[in-house]
Image (cartoon, rainbow, N blue to C red; front, side, top):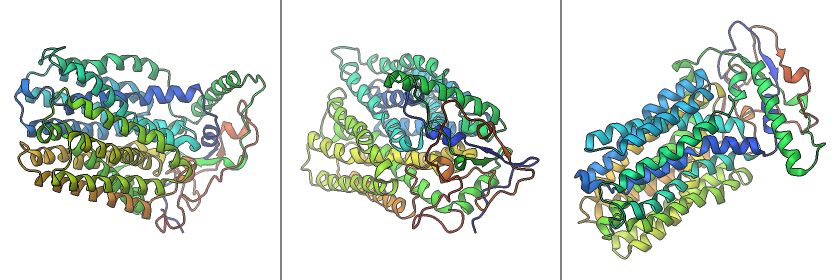
Length: 535
């Protein structure tokens, strides 16, 4: 018998609704592109600004050591932890939409002011502020994206969106070829201009986000079922109109929703820390292990390599800050192409299989590069080629970590859970740039950095194995089939009042008709990949 996810809603019964099934049956449309662009574009801006920091074009002007350059990366990650925890809690309590503009504004302001830095500590403070904004984005935006995207597309879309970070990093590399070249810009201005690029572009995204509605899935579990039903109907009408336009078929209607796809939902008070701990460690302990392992391993590896790659090239291969961008550009493209090319396989071949593949191949390639680096047989070019191969796979794996933690826990605490895993990962990731900055030193010895590379490779491989053994096969499944809302127990509801029917079950939504039923109470666990009770 399964353990309960949470107590039933106090003071009222459960309500039947088909909102998740209605959202999952939608064909891809202009509405989904608006969600992807409006919510996902910020990762491009994040990659752009982080690339400016990683290139260390400000190092000479501000008189910073290699350790201080690494510390700036750490400051940004510390800010992300704070932002994720604060804004993640706000997102679950007040809704996803209210955070769309707030987190983006905090991030853009922090990034722009960073470009005005005149000393190390001013720089640190505003990198923390910028980090707070992007930390909030990871928690609130990943929740909203997964709640809007149909189940059959969720894996590839989530992984691709998180991977677009590297599109921004590639743009940053191209910009730095000119901004850090003193033939075009003075040394004390080029890197500052780079910090201003993101905020200028980001202003347009604020207007797009204002048109994205509140998540109906969030509304239906927070006492706003009527608003959620109306919101889904509005989305359906928009999708029908766009689909008719695309297909030149003015009679197109959405397939109907079968009654068996309805689920029970109720409203619970804001989850307490004790309730969340119960869900994480008593109900879904294996999912918690998998989520924490995946997030920690990818965060440590990525932050260690990315925030110090310029120092490696400059100290061991004698590249200049401007010429370093020529080596970073293909590295960024490899990271971008990995999620875009491999993302589809997470929906077709399966989550656990692809996580193992991406984590193991990236770790193995990094171990090979460590051996060759220590032997002194690599050049800046061959070092970059090995990094490209390793992170082609690592990028897809890292993106799947965010997908995993956002889809395998109850909706009512999804944003907070993402923030907790993100915070834990960034705590480990925050020390990685500082550690590797110290290991690099002045480039006099390859031994310490080689050990660091072997450590990162081993951690990554271990993460893939753990995810494969204990992970959940969530591909193509509705979020509510993977994990029921907290107001409903897996063993069956024990409502304080009668089970009622929402508007979607008493009236056929616009454009509805028969569809293949999705088991509304299916167990979240798969054979061989879940905990015995509750997981």
